[in-house]
Each structure stands twice: as structure tokens, then as C-alpha cells.
Image (cartoon, rainbow over all chains, first blue to last red; front, side, top):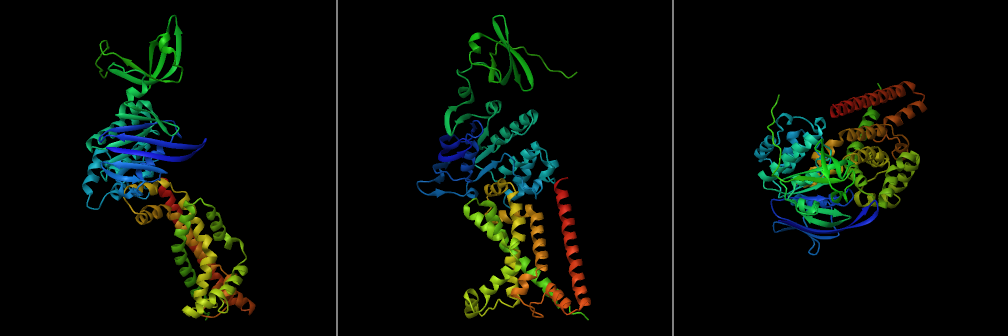
Length: 292
Length: 224
């Protein structure tokens, strides 16, 4: 269990912004901090990793106090055992992929490096330098490097925002896989609703420095619990009115799906909104996919 | 036979100055690269002053400061029996200050251009500041380090005014090549002057050529 309470005055583009949050994340969960850019998401990760000092606060990880401003406790980043994946990956340009991983570990710890190279499918890239890798490859190396020390807490700062959709989906699977395999507690910063629906057990919605909502993705992002078995997140790209109903074109994973909506549904939906499209499970159309 | 000692003294002076500068410039440059206080501006201005001031002004103040009759010079003379004026040690001290910006500026620029996340990533991987400096920060600014080393070396070779003011022209002690050239020309000894000048000319060209070749190769490797 990771619990923290943080207060810090931030200097944002719109003037001073007080950051004031407290969260509890049970062991083994993926929690997502969701919010617009400039809401203070990255600051929270940096404070958790010990790279930034809050004005006031407390961080407790599995019974160990990392930070307590009242008792003047502040563990250095070196002692906190967090794995962090930065937005720009921060791979060391002077080291090969393998050396990047080895740098993170103790000398006698070759086994975990080999294991992570296998798990993250980096065998072919071991001897390459970071500058020669694609975004997705860098992301895998950064994730592997963050895991070498077997951290208690994995911090991911919008690690997938620069990748295309296919690569994103694949890396989301990778993250979930290592999260379960190494029994991590993970905090993900994201502003992509589809991503956090797929990845997280718990969501904290951050607005102007405060958590305004928290809970499961479904409870946070839909006004009522949905009993449907299928649900997809998409963007409304077009709204047409046909007789008494509306036809919405929703972009879901590169596919345009046309769905109908009533006047009541449409009250607060406009073009550009993110929506959940769900269907109950009793009338699906199922067809086997064959390669012709 | 021409006395080659001035060339040797010049090399010794440039090597000593560059080595000392390399060690002291790294902490100064990293402080300047990571600091945003008002004090930074003041320090930056002080570090850059030798770029603008006439060497004779610097030399004059060194002479006042280190002369055995006044302030710092008298303390050094009485307590440590060190005399900085008209000695090789004094030349090294003066050269270090005179060439300071040539070492600090390239390193500072290199450090500022490095993503701050590299350092933070290293810290979060459990590495100390010192280990991070030697294994992550410095290896990734190699071209800047090389530029700093070469500029300081070359600048020290080319020193004239400061050396003349504080070192004088003592053969075997402070008579560097640039002074020797001036001296030989004054004595209408054009042949000797020609030899010294030719050696400096060729050496400087070879040094700079080597550096640019190495740096280009390094940069090419980075941008495959």
C-alpha cells in the first residue's frame, strides 16, 4: 500500500496553483492520475520519486516512511526504490541498450538483466545505442531499465503519448504483463481515457491541483454504472440528425462506428467529446475471422 | 642552435593550466548550468571578464595582488614562502584565471544542453551524484569537454600581456615562446623569432585540426 498526502505551491502559466492531494493505492494495483496538462500530474510523480520536495507532506510505502515534513524525514531518490519512466525516456546516450540496463543493477545481478531483455523482447537491440532506436523501442528499454532494481513502485509519466495506436496497444499489454509478473504497484500519468480504462484499477482525476473525483474508471467516467459487457471509448467525430433520432459517428481505434442516440442521450454530447459506447451482451453479432 | 626552452615552458604552462582548469571548471560550470539565482548572473559576469578586459589590466592587478609588498602576496610570502610574481607558479595561477571562460563556457553549454532527466533517471536508479557525474553526465558532453580543453590550451599558448606583466622575461622560468618572439624581434634576431613563430603556428594548426576531426567523428556516430 502506498499512501501519500502532498501540498505544494506550483508556478503555472496561469499564476500560482496550489497542489493539494492525498491518495491511497493498494498494493498490486495500477492507479492512473488523469488530468489536463498543467494540472500538476508530473509534479506528483517527481515528488513521489524524491526528485522534487513538497512544501508539506507525507509518503508511506508499505510501512516505510519516505517523506514526512513534520518529522523532517526525506529519503533521497536513491533510497526510495522507485522505477520511473520519463516522458522522453531519458536513456543514457553513451550506453548501449544492455549497458543501460546493467548500469541500473548491481554487478552480481546479471540474471535480472537477461530476464528483462527476454520479457521486453530486446534481444535484437542489446548492442544498439538509444539514438538509433524508434520511440516504441526506447519505451521498452526505459521500462526494462526501470524494473532492474525490482522497484516497489513503478511511475510512468505519459510513457505512450508519443506512439502510434498499434504500438500503444502493444506496449500497454507489455506494461500490464510486467506489472502482474513482478507484482508491482504502478502509478500512471495519462490524459487518454481509452488507455486508463484498459490499464487501471483506480483513477484520480486531477483538476487545478486537486483530486476532484476518484474511483474505478467506469465509476469516474460514466454517470451511471453500466451493466453492458462490451464497452469502447471513442471520439464523436460527427453528429447527424435523421428524423427522430441522432446518428453519431464515433472513432474507436481507427474505426468509425455509427451508433444511434435519442434526444435524451444527446443532451450533453457534442462533436469532439469522448464517449463510452456500450452494448449489452445478449444480442451480439459474432463471426469468425478468417484470412482469405 | 636555437634555445628551445621557451617552447618547452609554453607547453608546460599550457598543460598545467589546462589540467587545473579542467578540474575547477566542472563544478563551476555545473553550478552555473543548474542555478537560476541572481548570484548566477554575477558569477557569470566575473567568469567572462577575462574575455573583455585587456590582458595588461588583469596582469596589473595580479601584480598588485601577488606582489610580496601587499595583501595576498605578503601573506603568501610570509606564511607559505610562496612568491607568485615573476615565477612559473605565478604564471600558472594567472593563466588559470585568464583562461577560465574558455573552459567554463563550453562545459556549461554542454551541461545546459543535456536533458535534466538523465541525471534524475540515474538518481532514481540508486546512483550517487558522483557516480552519475562520471558515468552519465561527463561521458555525454565529451565534445564540450574536448572543446574546453583545446580552447584553454590554445589560449594559454597565445598568452602575452598577462605573462609579460606578472612573469617578466626570466629565461628558464617565465620566458614563454610568445615573449621570446617579441624579445628576438626587438633584438633584430629575425631567424630565431621565425623558428618560434613557425613552431607555434604549426602546433596550433595541428591541435585544432585534430580536435575538429575527432569531434566530427563523435558527432557522426551520434547521428547515424
